[in-house]
Amino acid sequence: MTHGGKGFGSSGLKIRGKLFAFVSSKGQLVVKVPKSRVEELVVAGEAEPFDPGHGRRMKEWAAIRSSSIDWVQLAREAHRFVKGATS
Image 1 (cartoon, helix red, strand yellow):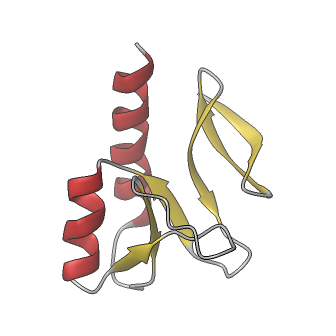
Image 2 (tube, rainbow, N blue to C red):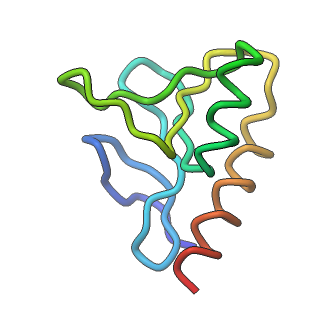
Image 3 (cartoon, one colour):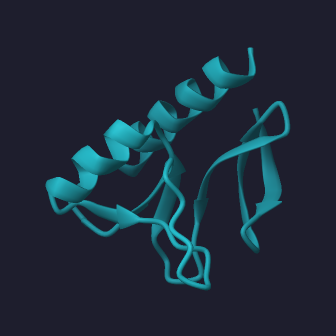
């Protein structure tokens, strides 16, 4: 795992060159997780689909808006997802 990568104009966490989590310019944690998990987080009111701009929502990216959700656990979940996709 490497730190300090750039993606969507933000610094973030990467594995094998693939970004999996970062803090947006709005101060939200943004994580890459399966589309079904993004939908689950949105329905629970804990996240919104991430839009890097221009009204283009990213299917596998969630912007966390709940202050009660564990950011570390979500980052680990995103790490596992991206690691599995790049193996």
